[in-house]
Image (cartoon, rainbow, N blue to C red; front, side, top):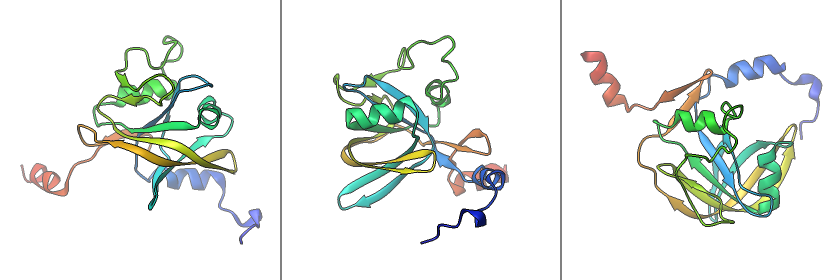
Length: 176
């Protein structure tokens, strides 16, 4: 196992390279004993189909990481291409003038269930395991339910949001 931190790439090189990796924009939500919380997250991935399992990476000292750990349930909401404002809201960019990040956002789910954001592709999960790695908590969840979204996903790369376009649409646009 590699444990020699002196041979790791410099932090700024790593961040620069990661800015070039596109990812879906997700909002992780939770509700329960620790309350209802939500945060924008870009580190989300499928882990296994047997059993259905996903992972998200959360800053270990964040409210969302602590709430997910305590509540034991979470929902990964993959935002649609029209939801950049929701991504900004849950990233905390509106916290100075919006007290509740969920205010005015259409969500579904009973109290104690992690909220599903309307129009998002949602993966409702029960917490299976957490693993601390550096500054983050890797959260693994068994997927209890999946709800299909209504459009293509919002993506994030190089510091801004992007839309996903199929190759055929790009070729047609270039031809015109």
